[in-house]
Image (cartoon, rainbow, N blue to C red):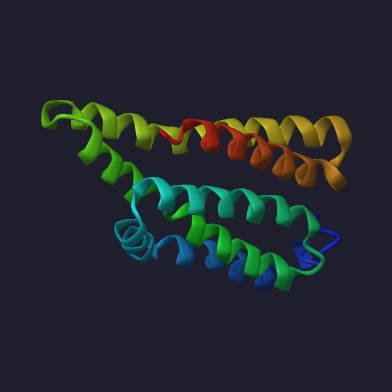
Length: 155
């Protein structure tokens, strides 16, 4: 993917905006919180979860570093909804004396996912070579996450 999109080792300046796009967009959590306050927690989080899944899968089809830049920014925006949604769900669904534990669990999910992804991508790259491994992992994990998130949204 790095070679295909011409963001290899000789083009460090192109990596910085791609990384920054995600980091900047994920800081727009207040916007995500506003959307969830406006449309409701269940619908708002469902919208962001579905958007996150499709945007993640679209990464596998990126054909230039500019496309990847845009997708990373959109992914950051969609992923930025997790924290406001988790806080809102915790405050609505748990009594005050259980909110600390519940908040700890929803925050732990991001760390577990990040830790597992490193192992999965590294293992896949070692088995299949660097070429298509990352794209396949991104698509597979986003499909699974989409399915799991959809099942976990209370009716």
